[in-house]
Length: 306
Image (cartoon, rainbow, N blue to C red; front, top):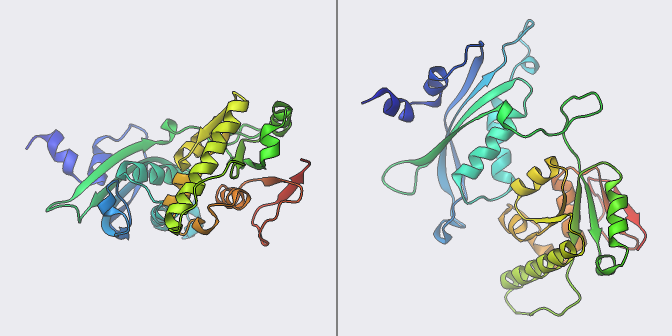
């Protein structure tokens, strides 16, 4: 067996060593971490958990001072397993490639992490293991954002819920100008359009109809101002936020794919906006005056005039 083929099937730790750069780095690894999850693009895979095997290696910047036997001074193994658990809990994905990208991005958000090898294998889709492996470096990731001192920081967007009167208002451009003047990424949410929609007796079907109707309204808003970009998946949202785009959320994919998503509120645009704002750790949620929201929000809610 050639060296290239052997390395292709070797543990990520061996691949990391074979492709190491000249600058010294430490490595931590997670081997044969077994988790059950609902994942897959085929309908037969939905609603059925299958075994996933994770092998992860993270190259880290060497410690510059004494560790002093203090877990807070190292990149803990828990950060790797937490990244896996958090991504599996965040939303249901179809592809192992998507899951691996999200996990690598979470790991590389750690200050000392420089390069991540993530291998994920499905154990229940055939006689052998089916999987993917990716390698991502810190330099390959888009910036999260910079503060006035040039330091890396997380971006907390403003989420704004627009009712139908606001969408149709002749001053919609001026309203968006005012929202963008805050200097934070802007995520716009809408509710059901005024037009009647089909009503059926099957709740799961009705939820999809309601979500699709909201998405039609999202496209109607985007048509009012060319700076608005309609996005659906969490990956799209995160990328657009980093790019500073003004985005309009199309909720179907994220609501349907997120474990314990707000399916019971699929008809309520303002409730969906609150859920998204909490999911994104938004700086605040803006809603029209008089909008009813559930109590106990984890984000600051402000009203703005209709």
